[in-house]
Length: 320
Image (cartoon, rainbow, N blue to C red):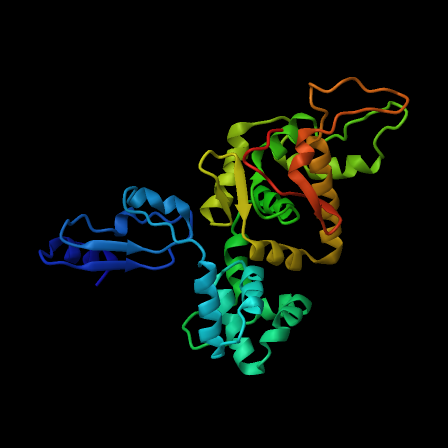
């Protein structure tokens, strides 16, 4: 029996049937030819590709991360251990971004080593090794967490991969679209307060690393970069399209995969992206050569410090 025969068979059935399509993740995959048209059955598609909503616009159900209480319960169940206090367990599941597979793997490790109180210390020291291992649990899932990321990340266009590498060195939550827009418009250049103090020559190297984003702001091209990351479920886009959120484990994966030297490269490049977006607010008074007075740009309200790098801490109420 061919797949066409199977579709014809389901189309001809007058009683209820269920077609289950699992892990339909490839953006290039067109499922329409494989889906029966009969109204007497149902089709269930599981996917990380948000573009699959086109197959049933009114029937799509977004499955997000676990709630914190659910994550803690899953950790304890898998570890076969219930501590007197949930404090350490809550810290573990937050570190793992409430991702079910990562929590299940952590629980299995804790069950074998009886080390809930030291797990976070071990995880932070050996994160790459732990997340690269196949889950040591009774499951048919064949891939480690990092292998699963590999399969999707390596299929992304080069510009999207570079975009996500920049996002890996920002705070994961509510990264503003305007950060990229303003920096592109300024040519990614550092704002100069005094002509006698120009930006260092090294800025040019990091500016050249950002040219994949374009030499001028192009809404359509930038949306294509973001959309390909979103379709792979690597970022969540806010309902108004103004902010992006990246899963913390994806950030860990990118940092571990690119290694120390390339990490330094992307830290400096991301810092240059931020410098390009920082400009004085127009309502602030002029610069004075002596006792230099320059308004703190509202952009700065969006940035904190993480690993020596400014990070987006985003607020929907902040304006840049």
